Length: 262
Image (cartoon, rainbow, N blue to C red; front, side, top):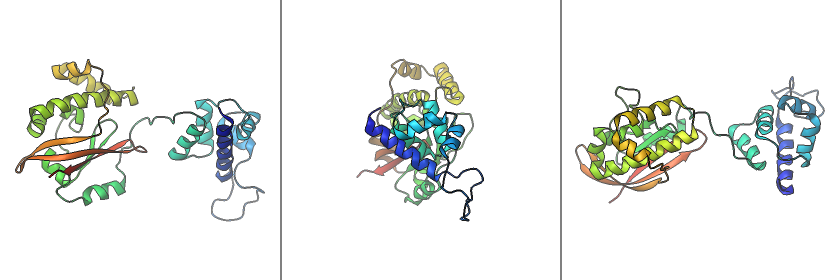
């Protein structure tokens, strides 16, 4: 990798080593017997599963491109948070690791924001497996509560191939949504290729929906994150919204805001 990148990478490694608490080192503010804070090179190298000579070259910017396995070991040895690990990978010229699964809980601050919107702005949250996690009152008014029976009752792809989709979206809107939802499922399966939930959903829809099979055969991947949507409210009739999808990368959650138009 370029020398400037190597130096930035080495500097960051030194920083991580300096702020990582060594075994037996005081963490409550009391004075430590160690002359320098953090880990020694030997300690970090052993924890990362590499030789101290190779680790020294990494810090000095004299080592070849570190492998993803080495980077993972370094991140674990220095107790990196997800953001710190991702930064370490990027400095080394690597894409950060993909999460094994989305977070199972919505960020508390996001929930407060979600429920703080007034009754005219529907907001929903779904995860990277395309399961709805939360809806505010305005969203419940249009889409209904996140309840029901069946394994896929929370899944926004599965919902696109039910009669309820045409009730809320109309025929044209439902057709557009089915295309988008199929492309979203393909994207999600690319992100989580071994996910049993997504694989079983693919099997289910392939067996029960000719429309899904037609869209799946096109091999489209979702790209649209913004657009106008017409939704049928059960008492107020057709309403138009500007739909915007916002991403919480750390948890792999999507926040969808429906801003009223007109």
